[in-house]
Image 1 (cartoon, rainbow, N blue to C red):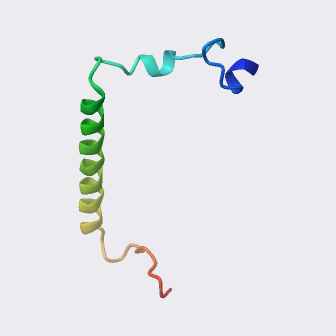
Image 2 (cartoon, rainbow, N blue to C red):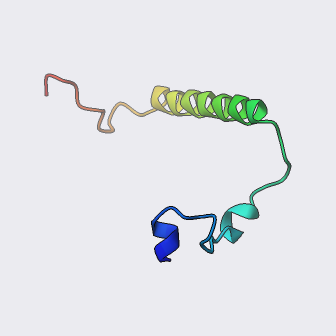
Length: 66
C-alpha cells in the first residue's frame, strides 16, 4: 500500500477488478472522448427536460436575489 500511495504503481499491487468488468471493448481514445462528450450532452438534455416539467408548486432553485 505504501508504494501505491507514493505513486509507484509500477511496483505496487493495484486492484482493478471492479473497473475491469465494465470494459466491453478496446477503442481508440478519440472514440472514448467522443462517446463521453455525447453522453454528457445527452444527460444535460435529459436534466433540462426534467426541469421543464417541474410542477410550479415544488421549490425552485434560489436566484441570486434570494
